[in-house]
Image (cartoon, rainbow, N blue to C red; front, side, top):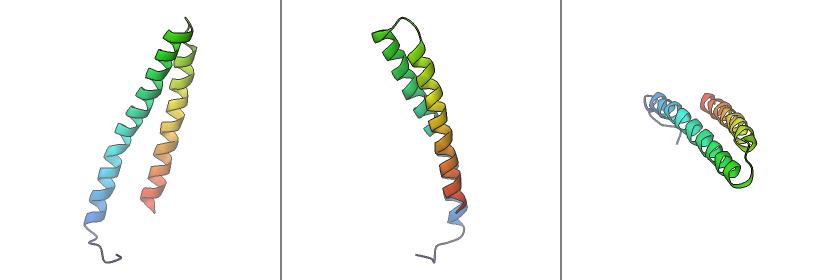
Length: 73
């Protein structure tokens, strides 16, 4: 397994880097949509949307940091 072609490694890194914004967008969209749905169902304010959208940004940033750390190994 150690005899991999060194030219393939940078290509794999680029694919991983291209997936990061897509993953961030999906995470933020899903949590924000859930917050909007909860606000419509339970309250008239937008407290769930605000809380879940901020939470999703932190989750997305944590995911990016974790992936970049794994990419550098």
